[in-house]
Image (cartoon, each protein chain N blue to C red):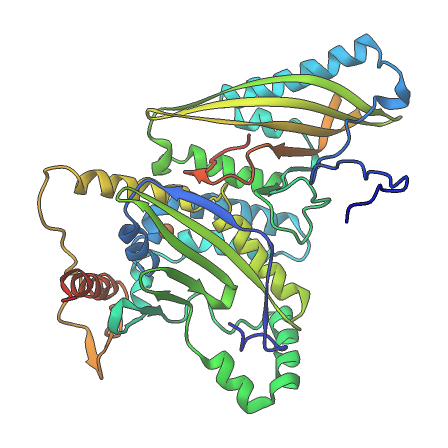
Length: 188
Length: 265
Ligand SMILES: [Fe+2]
């Protein structure tokens, strides 16, 4: 028989694997100049991908920088874990050289991407490290087929005398768990 | 694969990579044990990895790149003539085995540590039997492709005549040192992830094969390579020495398929 629940609190509805919407660093608005500088960096990164300037894209990373795309949002590290991408600069160089090789057969058809990056939020503004969250949408054309990939980027940026360098770029793709119609050949 | 675990069991790592190929499932299975294509299809990856591997070796004091680079650079360093050194064994019902490849018993410190744990668990005699099993890759026709020395499994699910889903899993050997798992993981990430540096070119070629087959180009595909040289013993077709690129596995699979298709009810 059903009874009235005695003040039983409803557990907060938690979507699996979703983190709460992060607050800005110290609850304050980051300075306009900094916001602008970071946005320009993210736009430049997207532009380099879409214009296929791979080496310049790799150069945005710190020497020990890592590009990481976990297969699901609950993953905290790429160490010892399955990953869609987990590449240091050496592996990035392998990927670039492969794509540029004249005998990379899969690279012969018409292929191009278009990234849109938005919702740029500075999550943490420490002395020499910044943490930035943004959202992306990438459309890809290969032969006559269009695919869409979208999700969030989390950039850990290191301040250097030549501007910011990427220590870690985490890519949480909304469709990371979906079946892939063909594969991803370069970074998203 | 379970025998290779000191604990006698494997643990499934909870992640499945799913990739759709726009080609018939038979093309994928025919490719799995094909020793002729890797140095051609994957040369761009092999050469790129080999270049970077050499650069790392030059830079580091130990003079060696991580083992995972070797998984990729082998496509460039193992040239087409060397692939004939491999051997396939072809069983009734389309099942096939590719024997040793990439050195089944390497002598690096991680493998030696693993050997120790295995000998402790099984004793010397049984250990020799287990690691002496000369299987690199086995095809369980028509649905599974398993690489037990690297703990990888691909399940093949036809979605239509021109669409095939592959579900890719990897395993942890219970009781084995972490380094052995890391080797399996490196292969899983580099070769089998949806951002693979390897399979992009395979899938592109499968698509082309499928396009060719669905055209009016011709009714026949030749699978005659090294036909007549294979050795048949008790219903098992072995490729002859130095004929590892024989298309015996494709012939074996087609034979099974033709039998299934013409079987009486
Ligand atoms: Fe291949």
